[in-house]
Length: 288
Image (cartoon, rainbow, N blue to C red; front, top):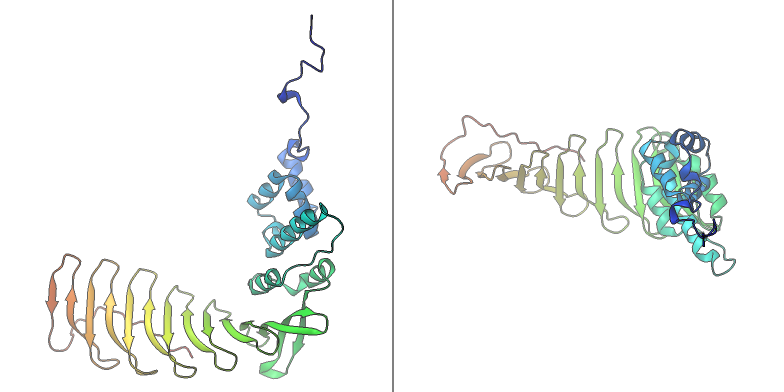
């Protein structure tokens, strides 16, 4: 007795669960290029993961924007609460802080954030005058706003803050040339702890605000320099090279001389007198 057509179907004959995934890639890109709302971008990606991956690999701007990740979190949260009833979903404070801290973030997208999360949103205002004229971003909950970011319009420097309203403390400063300063400490007592330079050099600092001194400098080639002394008079005392060699120095700033070198093979060399052929590059940078 022959099987009915329905009984003869196999899993391969079953209709696809991802109809969009069956379309040609060229048509996929046409569809994705026409999606101009971040919520729709996230919805497409969740409905058809292959579309989201294709958009990312193709470099479509909206899918690479940090706001796309925000929209994805919101869509997932809405799907989760949708299964248990009608519940209003707002973006979390952590999500909004993370977005504001991203150097790619833009105030142009704040209206979208306010639409999808009216209870907790980001706002932007221009305040001050002259050199202190700045664009200020705040985390807004009702009438209360916590400062997250301040961009000086004249210099282009961007300052990032953490903490509750009235206790916002500076944690990072980003310069137009790509340099980044990191700070620790309570509001009004923030001290510089690290400086990242555009060329890849990194300096570490210790000391209270206004008296921060260089204690260590790291370089892209793997070399590390160590310093001792008060601010402005730091002297180099040790250099660790990427090849395993270590050099020890004595002398005041600008007159440091090698007194001992320990090589990777265990050999030790001692030096006396002035260093005639100083091949070492002391890369301390004064950047206050």
